Every structure is written in structure tokens, then in C-alpha cells.
Image (cartoon, rainbow, N blue to C red; front, side, top):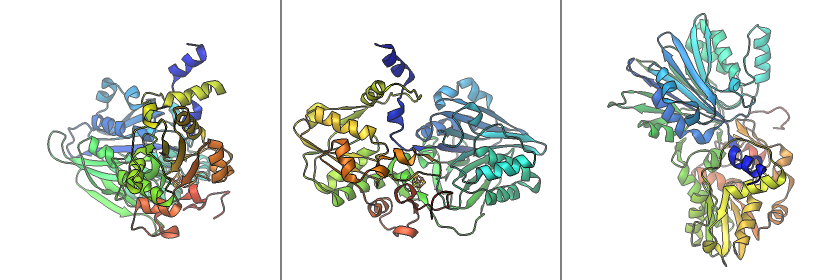
Amino acid sequence: MNSGLSDLVRNGLDLSIRDDKLREECGVFGIFFSDPKKDAAPLVYYGLFSLQHRGQESAGIAAAHENTIECRKGMGLVGEVFTHETISSLKGPAAIGHVRYSTSGGSCLENAQPFVSHFKLGSIAVAHNGTLTNADVVRELLEDAGVGFTSSSDSEVIINLIAKNYKKGLEKALTDTIKFIKGSYALTVLTKDAMVGARDPNGIRPLCLGKLGSGDSGTGWILASESCAIDAVGGKFIRDIEPGEVVVITKDDLLSFTFSEKTRRAICSFEYVYFARPDSLMDSVDVYGARIRAGEILGRESTVSADLVVGVPDSGIPAAIGYGRATGTPYGLGIVKSKYVGRTFISPDQDMREKAVSVKHNVIGSEVRGKRVVIIDDSIVRGTTSRRLVSILKAAGAKEVHMRICSPPVRFPCYFGIDTPHRKDLISNMNSVNELCASLGADSLAFISVEGLLESIDPQSMRGENSGYCLGCFTGEYPIPVAGEGQ
Ligand code: SF4
């Protein structure tokens, strides 16, 4: 093995294949047991495992014990950061956790979450999924007032604001803070005797509430980015936290209040296309069902005569099943994805990048040989992976390759917690569908329409302005004003 390739194998995933997807920024999870003798950290550990797909760069857990909060965090996957000893050392009946992929602030331990602040009136921990659009302004104001920062993360702004307002009491400190910040946020906040969940007024990033029943695990409350994490710890999904809602959980009570004026609901539509796990229920929509419907709608909007439909694992598979059902095209497993491609960035030369793409996907030749194949993927960002998939299908003997995509063309950046390449690197921003099809080497290419995407998520939903879903990266129309983007 040459040294470049061995580096690639040792270090894991290549920049080009990682960057060919939009990436979720973070996942949050928290447990509050009613029994003060219970320890919450072990269950938070399992909850974070189920949210690993939302962030793989760092992980952390903060637990409230007596009058203080202890935190352990590190760079890497949940299973790498925590050992039996570190989890056992986190005592206390309430804990919050976080998995992170960086979009705001660099990838380093200082920016890993939860953030913890110890001050005169107590200790507080915060875990945040989302991106604040006014973080720079708030940070400057806090710095002018003498508040020190230890990281470059926008999330540290939140904890410093809460700490600054804490003398007014927790509820007032929370409402004053969240009235001040703008952007997208799903927050879990921990104090010595309360766990808080809060969701931004548009509900861009997800957050839901679950309950632990009686039995071995004890009774308590759960906050999670996705319902799959509630299932993972044996909890029962109760409901989504509403846009603009705060829930304050203490040992005696769960208090809910709304902190914002009524605003337009704008849940991230891309959660349903790609980010969320298919076994999650998100804002009353079953994610797997939405993906199946996307395939059915693609079949209706852009059918083509073919012998086989295959999905690009993982999120393209339900859509391929739906497309097959809608068009009568036989569904088959034509593409296999390596589950063991690592997560660390490396920047090899072009030759190494191409090899890395081959490491990730391979074709089952016997399934596609001599056939007209429809291939379904969730999105096209830079085009690197799509080009490679078309090429390996043709090399394996596919007679025709027709690409169908379950999201509309991604033409605009996201400012709300999703990592997107520069506009010039979004291949759909720079090319028409026909140009893109030629550049991928496909026999035909079609994307689901914006209306089709909305229908796939919620067949009853209103369309356009009032749909209740953010479509910013497809349409350039954002639910919150963004500097430099016309509204
Ligand atoms: S811009 Fe796109 S990725 Fe970002 S929140 Fe809106 S729909 Fe989601």
C-alpha cells in the first residue's frame, strides 16, 4: 500500500466525499430524573449515541450534582470520548449532552459543548443546536460589559447572557436571553435543580419532549433533538417543543411558556430529506414516510422507462422504494455503502480524493448489468459523489443511468445551523439541470419540485409562504432576515 493510500485508510474519510453533503450541526439530549438518587449521565450517553448522525466531531455531557455542575467532553465520536470511568464519574439526577459538527467556530475542544459557567449565584450548562445570526453583535456587547469568552462558538454567547441575567431568576434570565438572540436554536439548559428546553420562534431546528415511566430506569423527563433518541433510552415520546416555547422541568413540575410573539413556523425541510434518522417522528411527521412519499412524487413528476430503481444509501433507499411503488419499476439493492469510512478530514491530492470516493460506494454488478437504471439520491451539493455513482454504474454494465433527486436543487447557503459550501461550490447554483446532467454523465436528471417536497413532508400542508417549512437553501427566501441576502 503506498503511503498516501495508507494515510487515507488510517485517517478515514476524504474531504471531497464528506463535503458532498450538507451537514447537520448538532444534536442535544437531556434527562431529568425525579428521584434525586438516580444518575442521569449513563442514559444521556445512550441518547447521544442515537444522535451521532447529527455531529461527529465532539461530544460532551454535563451533570448537575448537589450544588455544582460537572462536565466531560472531548473530540471524537461518543464511543471514543466516554469510557465507563468518565460516565461513572458524572453523578446527579439531571444531565444534558451534545454531539457537534462545527459550522460556527472551529473544530476544537474549546468549542465542544455543553458549555458550563460557574458564577457567584450558581452553575449553569448549555447545549445548543443551531446558529445565531446576531452572535457577533451580542458578543461585542458582552465583551464591552467585561464578559470574557473562552471559545469562538456562538453558543457561548447564550450561556454568558443567561449568566449575566441570572440574578433576576432563571425564568426571567431565560426570557431576557432568548428575546435578545436571533437565529435558529434548540437549547437544553441545566441548573442545579432544573432542566430547560427552548426552541427558536420559527422552530427551525427540532426539539422534542419524552417521558421515562416507572420501572428500572425510574421516572423522569427527556429532551431530545429527535424522537429516535427517546426510543433508545426506553422513553415515551410526548410531543414536540413548539416554536417559541420554553419548558422548565423541576422535580415537582413541568412548566411551559411561550416567549415570543407569534411568528411564522419555518421548520427545516432538509431534516426530512436527509438529516434526521428515518425512525424519528419530527413535528408530527414520520421521517421514513416523508422519504417514501418523496420517491412516489418523483415517480409522478419525472417518470422514465427503466428496468430497475436503486437508492443511494442511506436516505435514498426509502425514496427508491417509493419511486418503485409509484411507477411499477422493480426496486433492487444496486449500490452498497461502506459503513466503516471514518470521520477525520484529510486533504489528499486529487488522485487520493478519487480513491476515497471509491471507498465509500460500490455497485452490485450482477444487479445492474444490461439494465436501464434509475438511481435516487437525497441531494446534489458539489456533484462529486453523483458523478462517481453514474460512472461506476456504467462501468458495471448499466445500459442507461437516470438520476432522480429527492430535494430541489440546492442553490443557496444555509444560515441556520447547517454547513453549506460557498455558493460558487454549489453545483446547482452554477449550472442548469441540463448542464448538470451532462457534467454527471447521466442519461437524464430530475429533481423533485419545491411543491413536491412540501407535499412529501406534509400532504395536507399549505404551500409557499405559509407552508410552515424553511426552504431557504432551495429558494433563497429565508424565514429570518440574513445580512447580505435580499428578503
Ligand atoms: S436553509 Fe435549508 S438546510 Fe437551512 S434550515 Fe432552511 S431548509 Fe434547512
